[in-house]
Length: 137
Image (cartoon, rainbow, N blue to C red; front, side):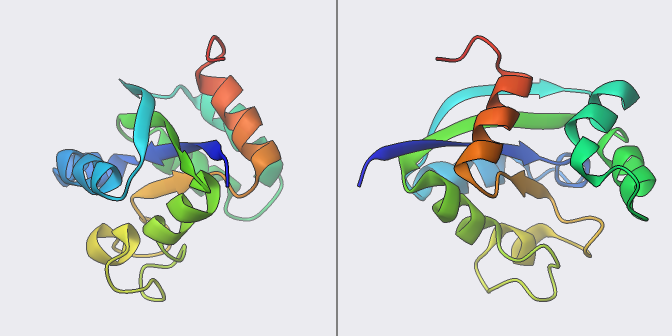
């Protein structure tokens, strides 16, 4: 199996709750290398562009409001099978349905406040990594 890259976000609720350092530690303990990391606040325009695939869906405006409600930490993560392993570590989108030991189970409050984002496929990872880290090779 080869080394793979994926994109991850630590969302505003996790940062506001003081969980950033703990989440980063868990990421590293699970064998991920953090290739790039930046704490930033997304503008409404950035959020709408990033989540453009959801435009027109009933939750789109709520999603944009949520992701712009505070700073986020965006990361490029690397390891073998990174996309699937990051999704496993995050857990199900709804923290109630997430497995014990997953980040969303540990820190998430509900489906709309679920502490992390991760790419769902290699194509998505490439797009999302380029969106935030355009100079990353």
